Image: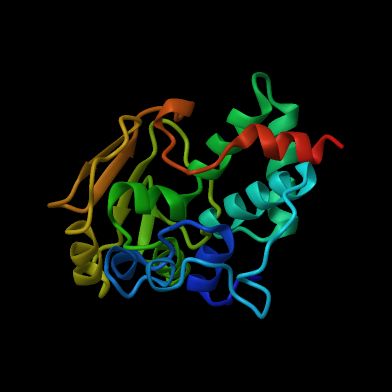
Length: 206
């Protein structure tokens, strides 16, 4: 399965803000954006022309990196979102938010999306009692998520819950039993992603 193996701190520096790709490290002084707030590369400190296309492209790249999705898959999400009723940008964010790896992070069961993705790939989570090892699995309202019985990753998950902030209203979590339930589809105001989805729609609409 294709995945992004690039340096994560460089991705945050390229976008000029924290995308919280490395979990707890992003909250410390070791964060790449805190240490070097300019983009990586030889010309990182140079002046860059801010064209309309550049702004739109950077927004799309930011969303891709935030959710840990590669280009072809991200475009597939856009096509699917454009075919659904409603606002395309909001549909796109809802699809990305409902990925199993992202849901685990929102619930506090993963310190970062890369960690959550690995836990899913290794079969440590079940949905409605069935083991799921696909990080992009789309959860639906009513789905019950739980750690697999006897999973050796239980302590890793409990450590991740200590970093948890507020859990979105569309999710319900029990950190004692490490179980959760999807209550409904997320609304735009409940999506904490630092993304202006309309710029992405404008980019793909050209």
